[in-house]
Length: 138
Image 1 (cartoon, rainbow, N blue to C red):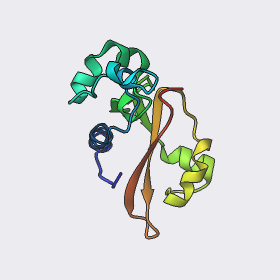
Image 2 (image 1 turned 180 degrees about the vertical axis):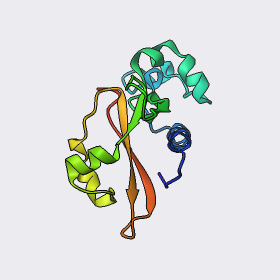
Image 3 (image 1 turned 45 degrees about the vertical axis):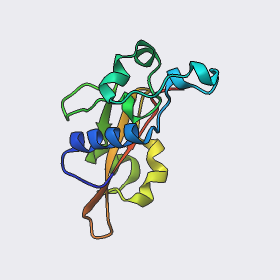
Image 4 (image 1 turned 90 degrees about the vertical axis):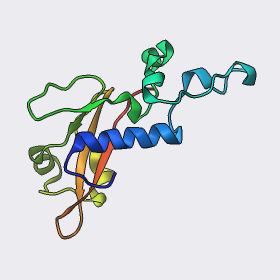
């Protein structure tokens, strides 16, 4: 995502983009069902989450992540936890992350259904992007 100071707003923008693109697992429209039994995708995120099967299985995408944790919040399901400056320094030995570091992001601790995010900087040290990653499904 392009950088913006409000990580929560960036997350919501990304969720809207993924939903609109249909880039998520739609349990009621799966390829294993005969064509005539497939349901059309919902027209809104709210309608998507009203579906009981979606509530049980999720979408295996960023749509399963609802909010960004603050510095004093306890990690909980369906949230994204920003990488801290201390983690960046301790685990990668740098003060600012860049796109070149993304390949090494597996060093940051994570749990299923709790995403991570990090601000990526350009060569001048200015924030340019926000990288979200994690696993919300199998």
